[in-house]
Image 1 (tube, rainbow, N blue to C red):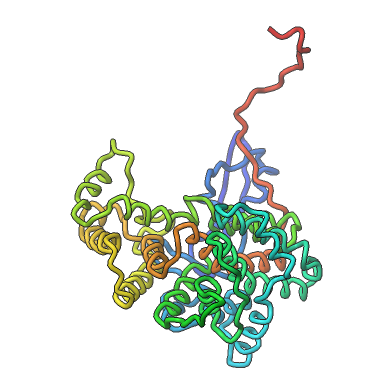
Image 2: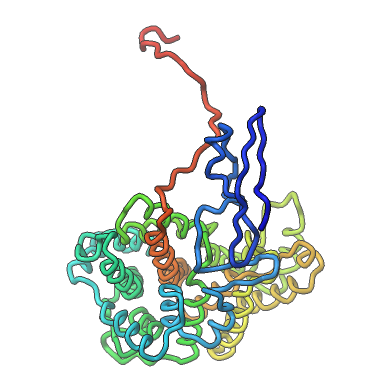
Length: 428
């Protein structure tokens, strides 16, 4: 057992337990630091702070490892389905055939939304960003599903979880349909989770929608790869909102709002916009030179990662998906040629290798979603569909944690000290 850590300041010394997880670095438990020393820690961005204990997802950024409940992400993406992974994240185990059938039935019976909720879309401008719509619509679900907002009732938490997972594709497809002026399509529960979403998004009432199995498989893998990613910004937002006792619909809406940020869920859109800016493969050397120039503000998007200092394991899977779908669909678009050539250069150029700037999942996912036919405004919405499962799993885990407290970070105050009020007529 590791000896306690010691912290001394101004003659005050405290001993702090060192806690070990099942895998990964040990952590110093500093919960009593302020009481014993009168000091806080200062950690902008929480780069060295564990705010919770979790059994759901593990990342080893140096080794390029991502595990869902202990299962490697590449195995799940290649062999599993999204609903199997959803069951795994929510319940801790891959389902047996009976559990899988029950879980699939419980999700699919919740795919429709309240008809009055559909009227909310007409309150938005036609050119409203789909993520703006999703923030509002998901938050509004609390006004329609009162029978699943009691966070202290385990059964209501389960019902809310199933509703959110099931209805998110329906809400997302409706946001897309509204933006292009096409009628909404009701769900078809005979289809897979991914297939149903594709049909609601791209189908029309006038004719049958034929699902391409290659596109459906790509959609499934995309959803699996983005289902959870430890304590990232949006997941932390969901947990922080949930720590106050907010209902699950409000918490997931908060997560969607955080995900909308270009530094988080919008990164794949930024990567695709960069490819469009480059335009043609012959212009790549120009942009590579700009990326290496410290005085040039241009940065290659979709390369490197805050956590991964090795090849992002999700990117390896998505790279294969991108190749398969581009070859299958035979799309003639120069940006896909740019993507292929840029990937080749980045994986062989010493500058990128030395700085560990490997292509990340955002680089490939933007290419895949564009090839399927999604506009860039829908990229983060697709991210929200898959990440809802992870958010719900993390929220549920937090609700069941007896040590959970309302989130209350401290600060290093650098503003004015005490000042006495001066009446308006006496101020210079």
